Length: 343
Image (tube, rainbow, N blue to C red; front, side, top):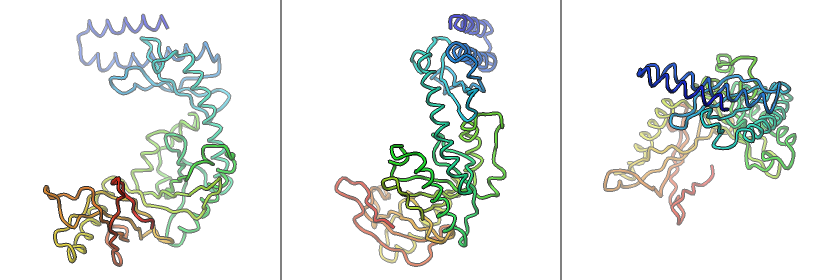
């Protein structure tokens, strides 16, 4: 690490002498990441000789300093090891680097083993995993969700989740969880996803931000499955997840339509802008039901705050109500927390 510190000081001196903002933000910033990566590689060669190969390094958030260096593992092509390091002070997450790297390797191997359990369970029932949430959970699979297929798709994926829970073991965090979540992406969206490089570790490739962004910039469905003592309610429930602008437009449509209906009873009603969770109606992808909070009278500033009233409404895909809305009163408990009835 001493050599890295000396190189870092030479880099800083060069930047200072140059007196150039371009050099400081450009070349010197790149050299800093290179120094962190070199220091991480030296550490890996010392403690895990021949086993870790650096894949990339990225600068951490401004103000935190240092870089995150990513390694592949020679004897486990699924595993990814991430190390946050600051070469100038020889520390990793403000701790001794040797210990932090050892923990990172153990964590990467454990995460890879857990991923294989997940992957094998979903492969066995015909829904290969194409992406994972940042923490390695919330897998994404591919299926066409229509009114004709939604119940079968949800039940089939529920079977995958049961395989996953059973294979993970009774003492696993998953088996003890209250629910599991699976994202369902349409084939058209999945075909255009950012796939990354085949040489990257599998867990790295499936959790990358550009992959997740390429999937979530389009509408998809999130399926939830309740878990009780390791048994999965395989019928599942689903909701549509829209990109931000579509979600905002959907919310405005619902808010306006609900307000118009409520004014017949409450002429001064204010409907909250807050959007509750919307769930697909059983057997439908073009009907969803959810709550909207409202205040019969606005507060002194014309707003609806801490409402104790709500409406349950079913809408089409654009947010236009279909059928009658149902008013529900006293939706907060004594602490002010929302207690909306299940639907």
